[in-house]
Image 1 (cartoon, helix red, strand yellow):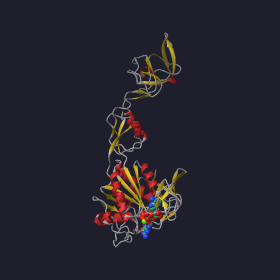
Image 2 (cartoon, protein in one colour; image 1 turned 30 degrees about the horizontal axis):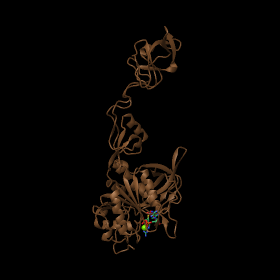
Image 3 (tube, helix red, strand yellow; image 1 turned 180 degrees about the vertical axis):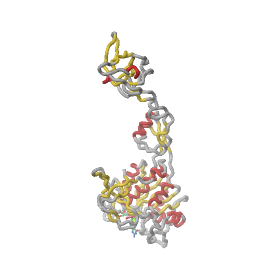
Image 4 (cartoon, protein in one colour; image 1 turned 60 degrees about the vertical axis):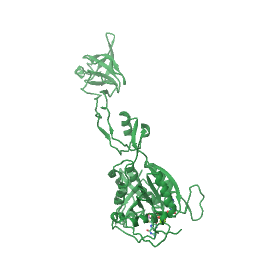
Length: 453
Ligand SMILES: Nc1nc2c(c(=O)[nH]1)N[C@H]1C(S)=C(S)[C@@H](COP(=O)(O)OP(=O)(O)OC[C@H]3O[C@@H](n4cnc5c(N)ncnc54)[C@H](O)[C@@H]3O)O[C@H]1N2
Ligand code: MOO
Ligand SMILES: [Mg+2]
């Protein structure tokens, strides 16, 4: 069915930062759950992590050696060692059976609790075992400073101190802290359930042989992999033909089972661009678009048809934007549909990938509790390894690969950079962000980059 109709929807390009802001505004932190500590790595913390004890919880030895009173060693030297009677042993995990009185020492192991009376530990290598009147003793060959080789109680953390805020992505070090402070069951944000829907009558399932004029749906698999990498659970809802009714039904089904919907394809101005048509129904019914848009650019109106009542999106739907001032992926759109965020990425694989990084990844961070400001793009700078010319006045996001040379970080624009191409996606570990209006950048220029995972 051809979607071309009498309707004409204006599409004004929203600046990328503004578009991301609109998406983040629509993505609130989601459900929480408890996971076992060993599954918490990479998840996002849902409650503050607080030290439940001083750390270390007792003064402990940093070395294998002897716990002594430093004053007893004041006159020690290699030629005239001081001899101390050894009254006990403090191995890690056990308290010494005796305190250190003047003239005595306790043999102590790394991690052992420093016994009362001792204020220093002398390393084993600076001592010699001895016997005095048939009883164990030690000769100390160096003067010990007070506090030497002892980690005092609370040196690292004070009980009650804040260690990580909700929304923190748990790195292995956080997991170590959670273990240290006795958190076996960790409150985290639930993995967002992400419905992935590919639109396009030309799309074949991955397992199908190629037939003339058709291609396999690679976007679903790519988006699913990106979702997993972002902490979400992809729900692969398959392919829908370019028919508004079918797409609306698929979206309704997606709303039942997901927290966020990502569609690919059908967002441009073509006769069969089904998502543009569906979202066009929203733009006609909302003033949000004009409020959100900039005058950075506009294009000829779209020919997408007004959706029929059967293809209407549910109530509680509104458009966030239906064009972004960027390349690739300028027709990328976003909406609230049935109260949930829907990101309509371009069907072109290169634009789909970039659209995911710019909009879906920040949204998935936000859904997992990351503060809106933190969920924005992670920017850095690098030197451009080769010049890159750009024609469009829009911001350009160039798939590129990083390398270092002489301690300098370089970003190499990858070949096959067109929006329709995917050859540059596997190797891309950053996106070079070229400013709007510029004609590109020369080799050696310092450019902004977005680091990819
Ligand atoms: N007259 C105009 N034409 C186009 C414009 C424009 O402004 N005026 N914009 C271009 C730009 S920019 C982009 S980006 C694309 C956006 O295309 P759509 O999002 O509408 O995507 P489709 O038309 O459905 O498909 C485009 C292309 O991608 C292939 N595709 C689609 N889905 C998949 C999939 N799941 N896996 C692999 N490949 C897929 C599809 O077969 C097409 O080749 O529009 C330009 N056109
Ligand atoms: O905005 Mo499109 O992705 O350049 O072809
Ligand atoms: Mg299209």
